[in-house]
Length: 141
Image 1 (cartoon, rainbow, N blue to C red):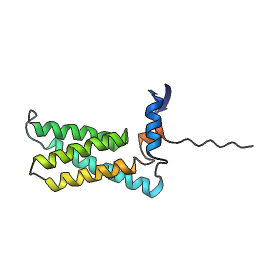
Image 2 (image 1 turned 120 degrees about the vertical axis):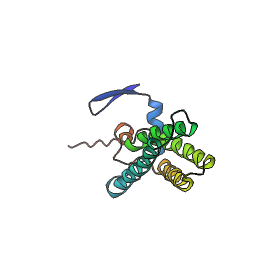
Image 3 (image 1 turned 90 degrees about the vertical axis):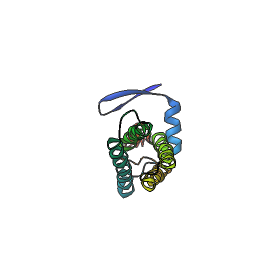
Image 4 (image 1 turned 90 degrees about the horizontal axis):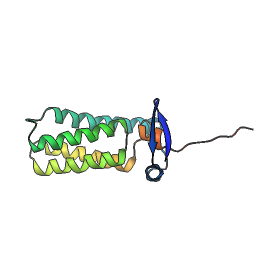
């Protein structure tokens, strides 16, 4: 276990989690690809949060599915545990698309974008890159 600091907050992290997240992606995309990943994360999160807020009564099962998907998409938006939260978002969105007829193509599209984020990673503009990213050490003589 070791401590890391992000924005003044310290967190204890397991070496297993750090190792897994570092092995998933060799580097975090920076520059234009990093901004494109940030835009993708923002677009899917905005859709899912808007959909969760527009749902019906709070005791309805679809409301819970949309709420869980929106919470996972908040993690996707900030880039925290991106592969896990994007995978959860994709599974829930596939489930919503399979069980409801409303906006089926939009939910399938959100699931497809989430699957893409699982494969592409969070990018350099994310909390994952700050917490689990590779470090460069340069020694000047």
